[in-house]
Image (cartoon, rainbow, N blue to C red):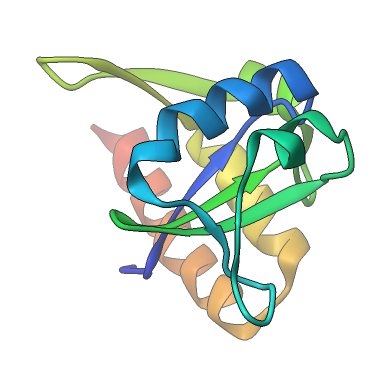
Length: 128
């Protein structure tokens, strides 16, 4: 299912958020839930006050999650992830069974619709 953002799970420790802020600084990161949107600054990153960060950047929307409902925090999600080889880089993504659990825990109609699709993918993978 196509969405308008990229979701990443990350450690919400200030040292990690400082790295995130520095990496996105050239792309004008703004807290998109703030009215009006305010810049995501180094001071924000160092504050230690975030559970999640919802950014608008010049590259698009980025949701930085400290926790995935139904799964847990960064360390648990990392354990429930798989590495994909994208030829020019490697990428970790949440494992299919964990994604299904997370979508079920969210319980929103669109998530529950996605669970049906994800289960069909899971069944197909099991037969191949």
